[in-house]
Length: 244
Image 1 (cartoon, rainbow, N blue to C red):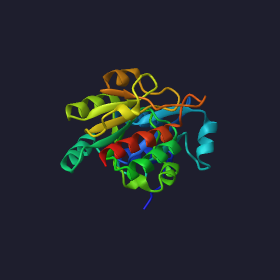
Image 2 (cartoon, rainbow, N blue to C red; image 1 turned 90 degrees about the horizontal axis):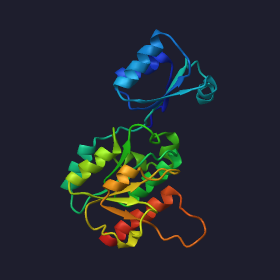
Image 3 (cartoon, rainbow, N blue to C red; image 1 turned 180 degrees about the vertical axis):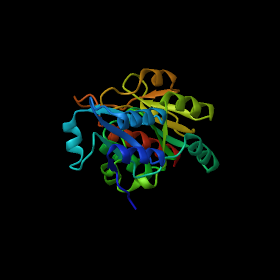
Image 4 (tube, rainbow, N blue to C red; image 1 turned 60 degrees about the vertical axis):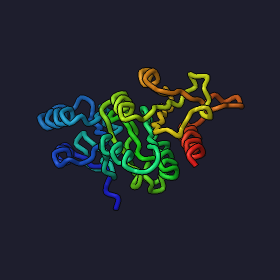
């Protein structure tokens, strides 16, 4: 059953944080002062919950209710730990297959990727807590419900997740145009984690540098790149093809 994906009001959000709700992001009104706002800000920082300051017009668009200067997006799913994902993947037959999404920001792209991940047997998706697209009702809808079936882990820093995966004998493949190697030359028969970058900036340079492989897709037309969800599908199905 999908639960609400939004709550509003300073006290309501404080209570939600204290009740360990899966909060993706909190929108706070710029310039708003007061003891309750200070309490909420401190609580969000201590719990490392993503918060952004926005004009009141933005909050008014998010909800018609009395938001008191704060609106929170609540995830409709429960997140997993990276350690649990790796442990479960290593316990099953066959090599692990993970996805790391580096600052992907569009919720519909996220949903489309989750749907493809479910169809290709991905063991888990790993995203960063801050800056990543939240799991919203639109994400769930675009994923055709796959978001309830593919485990997703949130980490503080994606680069640390890369190092943890490598220490677990999982190779990192970054999808990037900054290479001469084709996706069709990469050995996906090993335990692999594929990194897909953000829609506008691509993959963070430090993650590219730490990767075991870099791979690109052949582009024969004049447009320089594919939509990230489409590119991700090509990478995942190349892994499936090699493993059949």
